[in-house]
Amino acid sequence: MGQSENKRKVRLGSVVSNKGDKTIIVRVERKAKHPVYGKMIRVARKYYAHDPNNEANIGDIVKIIECRPISKTKRWLLQEIVQRPTLEVSI
Image (tube, rainbow, N blue to C red; front, side, top):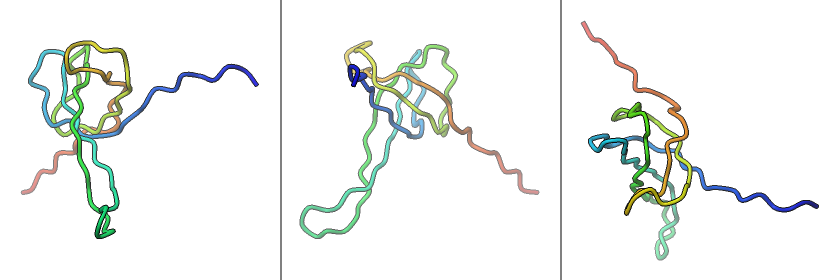
């Protein structure tokens, strides 16, 4: 077989902050089993991602991909906006 490709990690999460210039904070949730009790629990982690065009807003579901270090905390890049939040109008 040929050489193995260098696969970059991809995460799906929601934007919790977009206050920084060209930076978003993405919250990624996953389910894990509790080490002692065995119950499934939700584990969340925040990732700082580079958003070069400042196009993501709070509440968007986004896909981020691993990249080279851009700053002290940013090691992820915004790949695409999967879903924007829907606005419901009640009368």
